[in-house]
Length: 335
Ligand code: ATP
Image 1 (spheres, helix red, strand yellow):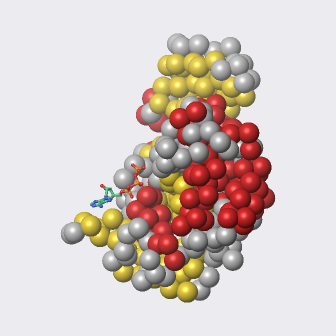
Image 2: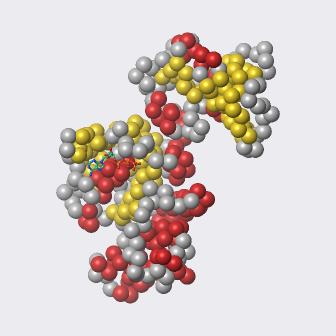
Image 3: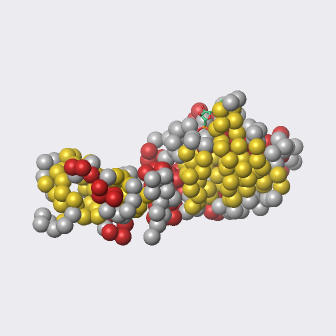
């Protein structure tokens, strides 16, 4: 089992409030991603769960037991860091086995667990190599192997892929999610990359300045963002936000439309008129940045190739059912 519950968790460093009362219920077996801008408190929240920091208030429950006074090693969690934290002088086998040796397990059992983990992670051919003889992706797999053999209640990942190049990151992203589903072990994963969050998570926690802005599935966050912060953070390119007279028409302080929900219609139709400032032709998509006068510069995403260039006049039409409305406090006003 590995259900993790936070109840009013707070953390201050001296006078500074970093985590301002977090409530969260992570079901057993879920893959939950903490995402948010730099400094919002993602790593701090993960370290509180791990026990590497003490809470200033509130409770952390693992399978119903309050663990705030339980030392990290006794919480039954395994942490995987961005830096891998491998021992350079030890072989892959030694690195994966290390925690089990410390725990005093019999040698035969250690060997059996290490070999099973290596097979799962495609590391069998590398068991006798040293970390310096491995690629970045292989090193990260060793770090994950070390976490797996301890058979934890949950894995805690702190930006584990950020040292890898873009292509390898995409590959490892798939491997980590596949492995987590195969093992069925609860996972909490910290990243500042919203695409990583959207592709890996069963549920995402969006953090901003020490508060949880929203907790939901990737599609819930995309389709029903609770407020302006989540609306602007989830989705790439970002949602267009418009204030002023156009928002007033919808009885809102701000309206939002995602770039993929704005179409280009023929001149003479009703819509928002503008002029293309920049056109990015990616082949699969065309991104247009359009100066729409009082509405500001709007981003438009058109599937496929669209023969438009800087200077061209365009008429834009938002899909009416895809216009989000926000009140003066920035909260979503759903119909
Ligand atoms: P990033 O994506 O940049 O890693 P993060 O969301 O993980 O950011 P945290 O590392 O949790 O952010 O830090 C949150 C805030 O807490 C930051 O303002 C940071 O400076 C502060 N902070 C973290 N650890 C300490 C500490 N030990 N003492 C004082 N302040 C700290």
